[in-house]
Amino acid sequence: MFSIQQFPNACVDFFNDTLQKVLCHQVSLAQVSQNLNQFLLMSGASLMKNVLEQLDTAIYESVKPTHRYRVKELRSRTLTTIWGDVTFKRKYYQDMQGSSYHYLLDEWLDLEKYAHIDPLCQATLAAHAANVSYSKAAELTAPQGISAQSVLHTIRKMGTIPNDAAAMPAPKPGIQQVYVEADEDHTAMQRTHNKQMKLITVYESKKEVGKGRRVLCGRRSFSGLEPPSALWPEVDRYIATVYGQGNTKPQVMIKGDAANWIQAGIHYVGYSHTVVDGYHISQYIRKIAGNGDSMPLYRALRDNDPKKFIKEVQKKYAHNPKRKKLIETGRQYILSNWDGIHETLTVPEAASSTEGHVSHILSERLSSRGMGWSPIGAEQMARMRTYVANGGNLVEYALTHCHRAEKQVLPDVDNTALQTSCKRHQLSYYTDIPSEAAHMPGREFQRTGGWMRLIEDSGYQHLM
Image (cartoon, rainbow, N blue to C red; front, top):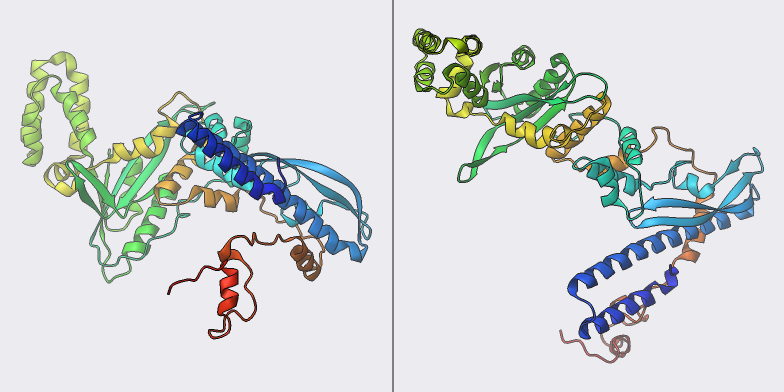
């Protein structure tokens, strides 16, 4: 590991060595990239070590004249960063007024007492963990080993992200119709039975972006294990804030599988009604039809003719009595949700993609692989993925919240003395670069400063 003064020479040595090896066909482009990545990791760790130790020296020089703090010894500390492990030395002080002991550098940086992972590394761990397992997130974040348990502790420190954490869009008062798609993912728990992780998606319209492919405009998602009485009011507040600023409130169409918690949405979301998504309609129609023809059943639903539908169901009874239980289940479901099913089959805007939302936001991380969750772990993971789906930056959020709620009191250091000490430790610019060279006084004068500018530019005359 090199010092900060050696860094320019280290860059030059790496460049010259790489250039020679490539021209001699000793390394390939892949090896050049690999070597560059290792050099950057080493450089990042070295620069971090030098910055921290110079900060510690600057703090020492600012507190020394006050005689309040006495240095007891020099102690090392190691932090795991995205560049690798950084071991630096800082001074351990005794406060002569209160007889307490301090690491002034740690307190100035608000560095937790027993933390061994730096804040950026913690935030990156949390961001990776939203997509891959804890152990894989540790491998992707830092070159040195971080345990999966450390990733878990980082996420616990971050807390459960609220559904309204992502930036709210600008108000859109002119929209008359808003669509809501709701479904759940059956998430396996470690010590109890499966729990329903709910997902609600609000959007304005669907836009065609390719053959058979559409995207949702103004999409906003909400998730959680909470009961409907807690989750649906959040949706209602969002719709009222974004779409309810005009003279009229938008009509809300809630799409889902007619589960009780979805049907309860009409009691919390104003101007709303429910319809049944096409996936569950076809599922229950297939229960009735079996391997037979299902078109007569669909025609009865589209024609809004319950009597005709019941006659078709009775034909299925007579044709295959052994399937009576399945047929009865399908019949009861469709008759209980007749209006919502009829609207789905006759109104194009009622088409739903709820299963796709659940698959991409929840199932991909929570239930597609064999794993068991704690309730708090499942809730946090669902909210993390929902936050990203809403356009949030998980690294920035974690940098703000992966920290203790109670801030440390800054050490009693004279800021003026600290700034003076800081200036003494600042490095001068590499003045061989013309654009970074210090300008000669008087060069700005057009008539008399020409020769000065020529000297600065090594005799090169700029053409204007």
